[in-house]
Amino acid sequence: MALNSRYARRLRARKAREQGGRCLYCKRRFTGDGPTRPTIEHRKAKMDGGRDRVANLAAACLECNQHRGRQMNQARQRAKGRPEGAPA
Ligand SMILES: [Zn+2]
Image 1 (cartoon, helix red, strand yellow):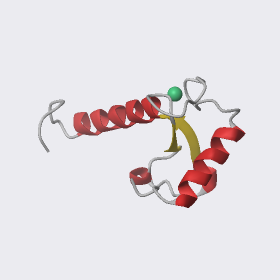
Image 2: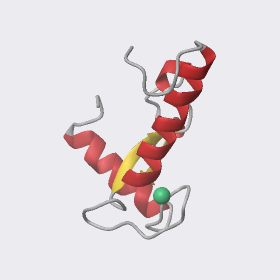
Image 3: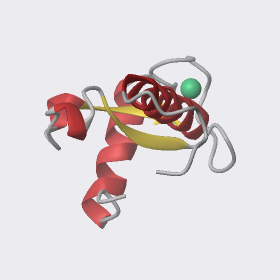
Image 4: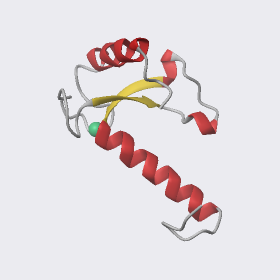
């Protein structure tokens, strides 16, 4: 994860505050730790041309962030005709 700097932590806190302390996707209230702790989410994934610009970022809970990443990976693997879970 590239966004691991002090700047990223401030940004994550700011985004979380802007969203009323809730996840962008599931709207659960962020917690300090665990599956509902805030993470920075790229609205448009970097590999799809998204940038690390503030407007492209949002706060999502860890669970949603990971879930979304998995879905995108599975979609890519299907597109390549590789069975789910097969080694790259
Ligand atoms: Zn969530």
